[in-house]
Image 1 (cartoon, rainbow, N blue to C red):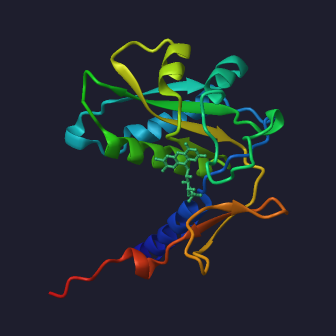
Image 2: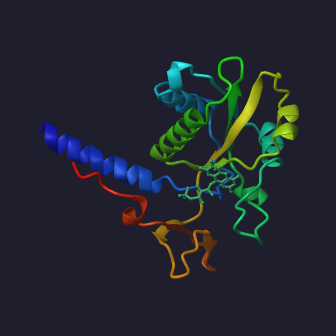
Length: 204
Ligand SMILES: Cc1cc2nc3c(=O)[nH]c(=O)nc-3n(C[C@H](O)[C@H](O)[C@H](O)COP(=O)(O)O)c2cc1C
C-alpha cells in the first residue's frame, strides 16, 4: 500500500514538473487573489535555504497599477525576436518579486532558484502558470517599487492563467536550444535528452 502511494506520488510529481512550463501569455481577465500569492509564499517557507539564513523576501503584486509598473521593466522571450511581449489582454495577473535582503546574506542564487521553482510548481498545482524573469531593468524597478537599499531584486515571477500551448521536445537536427513558436501559436521548447544530461555513472 505504501509503495503504491509512493508510485502514485512519483507519477504526480512527474506530471506537475512537466506541466510547469514557462508561460508568457495569459487570460488577463482572470485575476489572482492576494491570498493565493500568500499561499505560494507559505510553500517557499518550507524550502531549503543555505545555512538556513532565509535571506529572501517577496513583494506581491496583483493590482493593475503595480502590475503595470513591474511589467514595463521586463524583457520577454529573447529568442522570439519579432514578439514584443503579451498584449494587454494577455498580460500576467500577478507578480512575485523575489528580493535578497543583503543584511542577511551577500548572495543566495541557489535559494532563489529553489524558491522560484517552488512558486511555479505551486502555481501549476493551482491551475495557474508563469515565467521567471532574470532580464529585469533592476534599478528602474527598485525605484518604481521604492525598495529600501538593503533589498536587491533577484528575480521576478509573472503569474496568470495561461492561454498558450507549450510543448517540450527533443533538440532538432541543428541542435538549437532556442524555443520557437509555430503559426498555430504553439510554443516549442527543445530539451536535451536524459542521456546527454548524465555526464557519467560512477562505477563502484
Ligand atoms: C533564471 C531564469 C531566468 C529567466 N529569465 C527569463 C526572462 O528574463 N525572460 C523570459 O521571457 N524568460 C525567462 N526565463 C524562462 C526561460 O526562457 C525558460 O525557462 C526556458 O526557455 C525553458 O522553458 P521552460 O521553462 O518551459 O522549460 C528564465 C528562466 C530562468 C530559470
